[in-house]
Amino acid sequence: MCTGRIDLSFVLRAFSNGVDGVFIGGCWLGECHYLTQGNYDALSLMHICKRLLGHVGVNPERLRLEWLSSSEGMRFAEVVNGFSGQVRDLGPLGEGEGIDPDALRIKLEAITQLIPYVKLVERERLRVPLKSEEEYERFFASDEVIKLFDELVAGRLTISQILLLLREGPLSTRKISEALQLNPSEVSRHLNISARQGLVRYDEDQKQFALV
Image 1 (tube, rainbow, N blue to C red):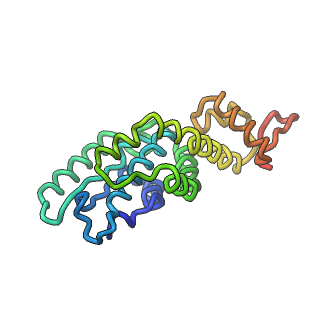
Image 2 (image 1 turned 180 degrees about the horizontal axis):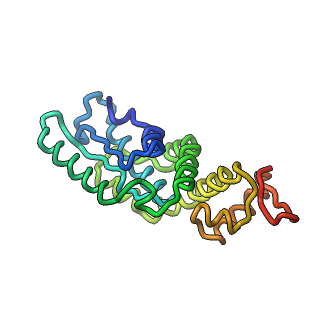
Image 3 (image 1 turned 135 degrees about the vertical axis):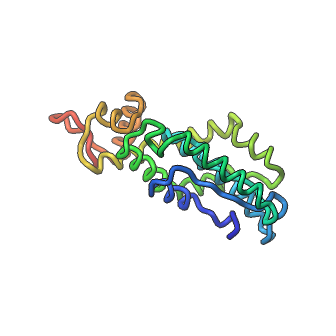
């Protein structure tokens, strides 16, 4: 299967099912067997997915993309063994990051729900011309892209986590912050935004937020 066929949802499904690390192996750039240059799509996906994982507190190094050819059996073994050792050092998913299992479930579900929107942002604002792996690295590490991610994706991802948590019942700002391991002021800001959008309401008697 061409790495261009790999979807963000595949990676998130693996992590949601308890996998501690995800390895993607693809043809070397410029050597696409299908002439679609799908491995560049996989490269873009990896950068975006790592940023999403990092935003919710999951170590981005749990995701690895490597270029390999069918004749590089020995290199394949070395790369996979090296990645397996790295994942062991990171520890079990969530536990290694100090994230509560329930919070981890919500964080990964929040990313999954946001995938259609993230794809739209990638297509409209984060599409990189086919040039080189180094240019992809520079592009996704640039201040412009980091700012764009914060403006277009980060806030929505935080709100998605909050709404998923409130689905389980009303909570105070402090309880939400503790459950999701988020900054209280950040939670308060996004709750206010969500209230203005008609997504949540504040119960004066209970001093808690609830879904509308």
